Length: 192
Ligand code: XMP
Ligand code: MG
Image (cartoon, rainbow, N blue to C red):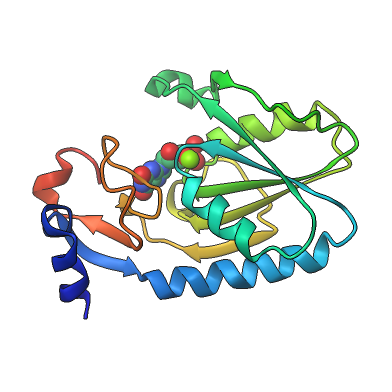
């Protein structure tokens, strides 16, 4: 039961109000995405691009179920002010190491909320003339979307709640939980 799973995580589990998506559901969905990607990108040697650190679990699990040759690379962005975000500004603090011109690029993202971050990063990658550029997102939060971004591979639609686990953190905590959970209100303080 979910209670037993939360109990296993001790103090971390006690902060979780509700498990929204279980470890099994995530595993099954990632397997399905990996199978589709393996079919669609056969003979294309795609470059999978992710943003650190939230994508760590998804990228590792996705790579393990992809059965074709592929490469992986990461970007890192600085946390930004609310005003900068409104203008779609993102500061890159680590760029890709693999040149992507002429390559088939699959942008792998853990969660999309407003879409501002992803929109900015996709424009930056498109400027480098990849052969193709598609998006794979595991957790989609459509409630606050400000930018329309075509999501070729999509895992779950999530309600408008702040979630943690499977790489997603609150103040760097809870990334190690293998499921997606909602924090108790007294833990969240301000986040919704
Ligand atoms: P935008 O709004 O630009 O934001 O699509 C995407 C980034 O916001 C963070 N984010 C979350 N992080 N739980 C988290 O731990 C959440 O529920 C959540 N919603 C958005 C995340 O960094 C993502 O890359
Ligand atoms: Mg992220």
